[in-house]
Structure formats: C-alpha cells, structure tokens
Image (cartoon, rainbow, N blue to C red; front, side, top):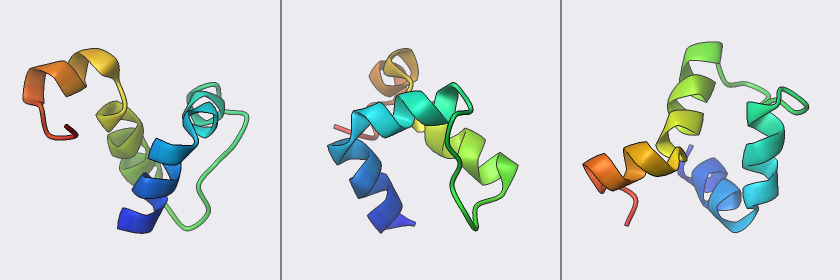
Length: 52
C-alpha cells in the first residue's frame, strides 16, 4: 500500500484520473480507494497534516 501511495505522490496526474474514474487501483476495494483519494484532497491534507 505504501508503494502505491508513493507512486501517486510522484504521479499526481494519476490521482486526477482516479478521481475522474478514468483509472482504477487493481486489488484495492472501493472503500480503500476512497480513503487513498481522500488523503490527496488538498483541504483535508491541510486540516490533518498527515502527509507533510
């Protein structure tokens, strides 16, 4: 999972494609994918500061 998040951090265009449902994460449940995408939401990142 950590490798996937690192990949998404290095490839922000993939985050956009995932949010637009033009791509998917194989082997990841819908709930897990939502949690991952929520972590890349700018407002939420500023509020919880976990990804700095």
